[in-house]
Amino acid sequence: MSRNSFRRKTPQYIRPRCADTGDAADGAIIDQALALYGSEAATAIAYCALDAWFEDEEVEFHRFAGLFRRLRN
Image (tube, rainbow, N blue to C red; front, top):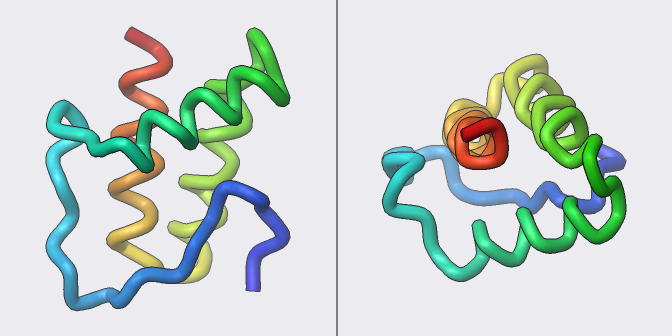
């Protein structure tokens, strides 16, 4: 189990959402990351994406990768 405060378990049968569509929860994750990490928020989100990748959680990986792209743009 991950120790990241941003992560939540979701069923793996759900298709990943497009990064551009985002929902209120995604916005809340970005807001929390910015509040906690400031200018390093993108790095924290990238770490969450890598953690999901290494745990074979494809849905969570795509979600955090999309959030990372939103923070970097």
